[in-house]
Image (tube, rainbow, N blue to C red; front, top):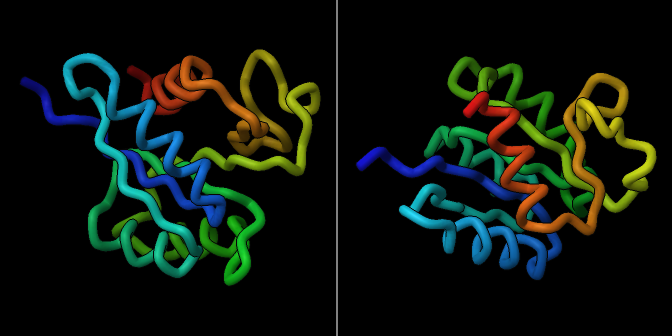
Amino acid sequence: MARPIHILAVDDEESFTFFVKLNLEKEPKARFRVTTAATGEEGLRLAKMHRPDLILLDIMMPDKSGAEVAAELLRDHRTRNIPIIFITALVKKEEVSRDTGTLGGREFIAKPVGSAELIHRIETALHI
């Protein structure tokens, strides 16, 4: 059995991280393992400690913005190659390119997001 894909979901909206964890971990064959963080600082600590396969990162958080967290992750040799998908309610689905899922060259998912779309975007980002 292959090891599960480790996702770190960083979002101050607890209902969102609960949804992500619940829906990804119920996937057949235990494909995903999800760790959650409610703040940017906690997300940084967990990313450096666990080095997940992918990070789902909210843009607006009270302590550090998603952009600040991403910049710090890029500066650290242990975390710079971890793919990041930004998740935000700040953009509308129509603003994110349908073909590439990008806005300004960065991976974005507009909230709300369904589990099928989330899984598809994770698989695309990880090339699986």
